[in-house]
Image 1 (cartoon, one colour):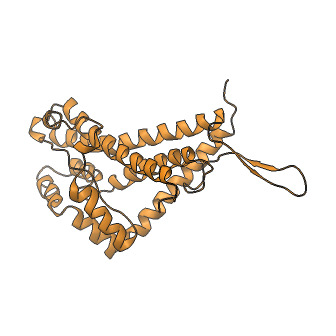
Image 2: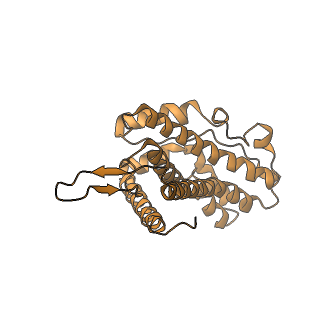
Image 3: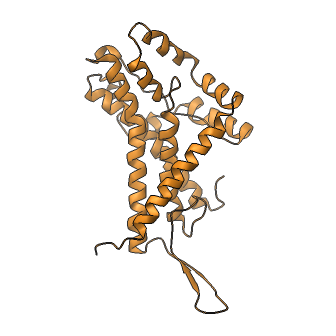
Length: 245
């Protein structure tokens, strides 16, 4: 649910575009470093979202899913990979896949660090609640639920952590064509690998069936809540420390 503040909504959309572009660009960059220049030659090693957006996967599918189920599932334009250019095909294909979720975890850590520094520096503001029995209560920002915020900038930083954790967790699922399935493909016997990778053709149809037919959203949602609560606890523990200034 987007907040009513237009600035907050615009900020959230920009964070979503950044997380998606960062994820896809990481795939392309690592592929290029491992010997496959296909994505780089197509201009995919960039944070320009226009290079990574797919009309169906990035716009139409998430809108339909959100309208039908209240949960948006989508993705960016798949990064073209030619595994024939890799020295170790299955291993390098797996490393390229893990670069996407790994980059989102790094971006989540960056937003978390920005939240901590901004809190220490007093940039996120405070809330003063009147107390009829004494001094007013002053609440400083804590890394709680993403929709519990005092300023728009605080919301942006929280959403930056949450969105990137969510993207990393979702893409690490071992379901073709998600990035986590490449780890399975790497450990499978070579004779079976082509059959496993062939499941990519079913694409998001498999994911939608699993999530809606077997209640996958419930388990994913529970996992994301646990991840966010863990991040909240860790960040709040750091906030209690005194910065060296």
